[in-house]
Image 1 (spheres, rainbow over the protein chains, first blue to last red):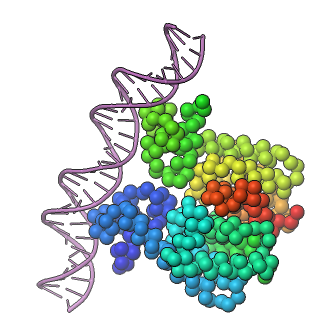
Image 2: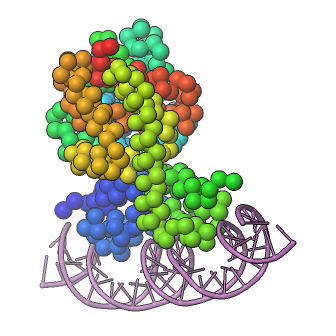
Image 3: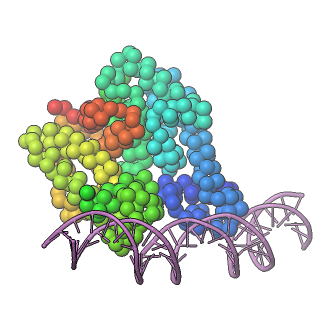
Length: 185
Length: 185
DNA sequence: TAAAAATGTCTCAATATTGTGACATATTGC
DNA sequence: GCAATATGTCACAATATTGAGACATTTTTA
């Protein structure tokens, strides 16, 4: 049987992504566990959310770091990071929503230290591509960053809602992102 | 002084967009009105959300319809609709989040009848462009629809968070959308 | 200005949510 | 099988939220 703590966190992520104020009862149900058990693992709602955030951040970061390392070509690095994020599904959506209200500048500092340097790596690639004029010169990096996140979420959502086949989803996302920033390969 | 009912609805939209479970107290505060007054206008939370939905849907629809009519060229129609949606800001985000979990197919039926035929018009333009091979042939209409919404929200969010200047925001959104779907003008 | 309408203040009961204790039952590892 | 651990069930108090009544105060309107 799956580790109970893990089960609860996964359930909480699914719940809180849709509605951050779902009751503990709802989360427990979703996890297939009694409310009492949930409270044995997490003191209170704040604690639970904190743990979710940490777990999901680590998980996304690990996946995107691995994706980053998988190739030497910078464009392929970005593509792999995009795919990794999409594969993270609910996890990615959760941490995105958590950070949604922070401005780009705040986020920059936070993410680097808290969750490794995936974002920093991403930024460096983008700056490099921009310097080489391989992407649309009008667009700013913060815009592209927001767009990157939005396209990932669209991809995750499109699969979950049943609009798009899982296989198409990543392909569409990459094609759209490349086009959106005018990337020349 | 602004109509109280309107003030409350606007406040509720701002609140519920960020957290659908904000208390009535919070909404009343945000509206600068006592909780008792709020309850005189809206029987309960369900009623309030229902009214918000209706108002915002009408408002977005009106704006996008006007934008649609403003030009004869189909591409400019789409661009104007995009701009209109961005200008709707909180209103747009609210109705988007409300409908976020419906699949494209459900939405299609719902929106046409409930909120005029803006979506139908948008679809017809896209189908026309696709038939003329003026947009990326690989992408499907449901994907493009989701992407359209995502880019609008990114644009709204980018301005609100302070990352992007208001003037740049619409420009970026249109450039990115055109690129993402490979639109040939 | 005076009546009418709108809003605020204070209050209360009903309900929902939360966190925990006490104990029973199930599951695991040896 | 037995001890240890994990989980479930039920109960309980503490707190938060909701919806509404009664009446005062402010604002509108005629």
